[in-house]
Each structure stands twice: as C-alpha cells, then as structure tokens.
Image 1 (cartoon, rainbow, N blue to C red):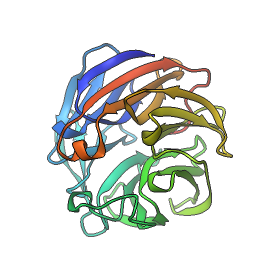
Image 2: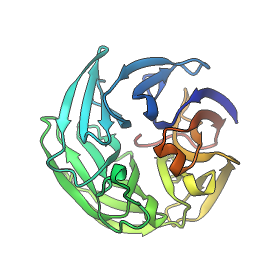
Image 3: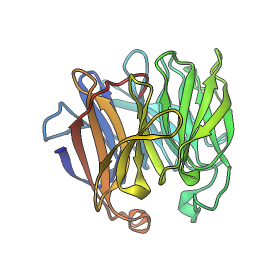
Image 4: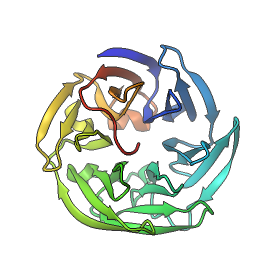
Length: 280
C-alpha cells in the first residue's frame, strides 16, 4: 500500500468518478477530489456533516447531510437543496448510492447518533430510503441493523448493504420500480462499514472493528485481507484507469473521540487482481 491523501479529519464515502477520487471530510463539512496525486481540492462545503456521495446521470454530485436529514446537489460548483428527508427519516442518515436511473438509495440508521444512540444496542430499526429524481421519497427496506455501506451489482438487480451492528451483509433484490426485497444475509465481519464489488462477484468490506479491509465471496468466505494496524478501516472503492486500484480509507480515532471531533484520516491505495463492477 502507498499513501495517497493524509492529514484529513475523518474521510468517508470514496467514489471514483470521471477519472478522479471524490470523498467527504466529515468533520470539516468538505467534499474533496483528487486526480490521484498527493494533493486534493475542495469541491464544496455543506452545512452539517456530509456522509454519502453519489452522481446523477448528468454528472451532478449529490451529498448526504447526516444530521440535517437532507440531500444537497452540487453542479458547476454551486450548491443547492436536492431533497429534504426530515419527515421521512427515522434517524441519522448514513451512506448513499445513486443507480443508473438517478434514484438514490439512502441509509437511515433509525436512531439519532447525536442523542447518544448506540448502534450496537438499537436493534433492527434501520431502513433504506429511495429518493426519486423529482425529490419524492419512500421507504424501501426496513428491519436493518445500522445500515451503512451500499453497493449495487452491475446488472442493477441486486443491492448489498453492510449491517454494521449485526456484523454481516444483507443482500436484497431490486424490482423495476426500485423496491427491495431481502434475499439473505451472509458474512461474519467486525463492524462492516463501506463496501464495493468486483468483477468476480466478491465484495471488499472495510471492517472498522478489525482494522482491516476484507474481501469475501457471496457465501461470506474470506478471500483476502489487508491489515491496517492501529487504524480503523472506514470505507473502500475500486477505481483507477483499469478499475484495479483499491482506495482504502482509514481513521486513527475511537467512536468516543470521533464524537468530540478528534480523528486523523488517510487514504491509501493498493493494486488488486479483480477490477471494479457495479456501483459505487
């Protein structure tokens, strides 16, 4: 592994788009991008804490504001409101994935992290919300345990979500109208956070509680492991010119320190055998 970006606070939601790596620096409210050099530039800054990122079919960026329960849109450097989910969300918002039709899947933890909510004790109160291009929204999945990273298969028929509190991955089928139905759950992982898919059908999983990025098959069997001693694995995405660069986001912090704004973030890269597939 080699270091690509350092001196961040708490990076989240890496996305490889248009030849660049995009990600949030959550504690500063900034969205950053880099052309794979060691320096990055700020794309925009939102009110609140940014979390999930996604791109609409025409290339506009959509950003989750976790505690404001809103989505923002960034086009040509201009920031505007995209969707207000305060009347629909049951709790803090988390990750986001936009499908090829421009529909946004948004994780809803089901409880408020700022009010001392403990994801490990909350139970299956998490949900996935679906936001349509006209900003209307509805609940499409319930009964999840702290839904975090989201990935979509290349054919758009299968969606995966990391259930952090349950240490597993949930697999859901996607209907033509975007509705979801639970197919199964698999894996035994230490606090899975961000996830991404490769062309072999396997998932790379950032395991926050294991300080490692772990590649698993659809039966939950471990295929590969990248250890990050002393640093929590937060999120990952495949990209680069051939889709075989794994971008690994880590943080030197604790959950308690993070709530106090104390964290050091970094992005490292490593070449892997299987290229990216699906989204993100």
